[in-house]
Length: 325
Image (spheres, helix red, strand yellow):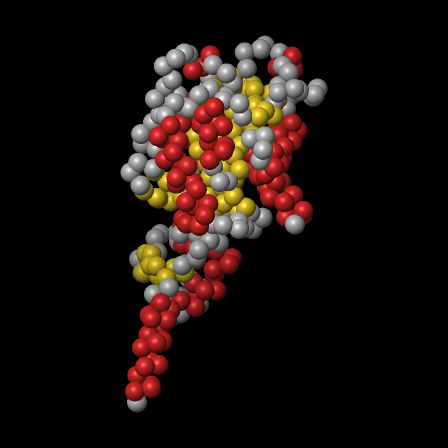
């Protein structure tokens, strides 16, 4: 009897976990199994059978939901609620990037399985105008969606304490890279990123910073891509992103400066202290009437296009690395 009692208590935590390995949701008007799973960020094809098994006896005709009833939803680590995370450094908060939008987001593939991507607004870091920062935040949200539907874990990292604008000059008139004004804020970002990097050791991990200069309301934008010269991973992803942008550039001649090396001391600080390889993608409104006269990458001003090109560059980089391995 004592042996049976001991075995029971050893198995009790496992049994308890098995009984609670789900969350619950109420079926709304128009809901089916697929839509309920999508709302929770789950791949409906992958989790359909598990949902049916969890809810046996609570389905009409074996697969139809009853309006207003509570249903058990499988817990999936690959739920888009868990793979798309917004991190607020101050205060320390983590929330799902997407909520109501999940009903309209479909899983596309597992091409980025075991990839962890960190996204930062360069305008946030550099103390830029709220308008430009909103644009980069929108691009990052779009980019996060394009990455998580291919299986990536994405962290969009922000701070409620914005960096102060540099006082020594006109930020828009400075070098292409600009200047990061707040060392303590950089350290705050790095602490968050590096801690997560160590937790995800062994996975493909990259840090992407997007910065918009002068808005993107005109017809065309110059694109500059930066990497750290001592980082082989940084060079490779910069090349892959650059190649995708080149295919859509309105300039067909060889350009000289669309792939640059970090030289600004603040960007160098980030590059040297960030554990994942870092890439800066900068978009700047072109003032030239004829964009083909530019000696840079020139892309049509379209946030959806920017998002697709960056995402495709990441996909190509990840695939290239896997082929090399």
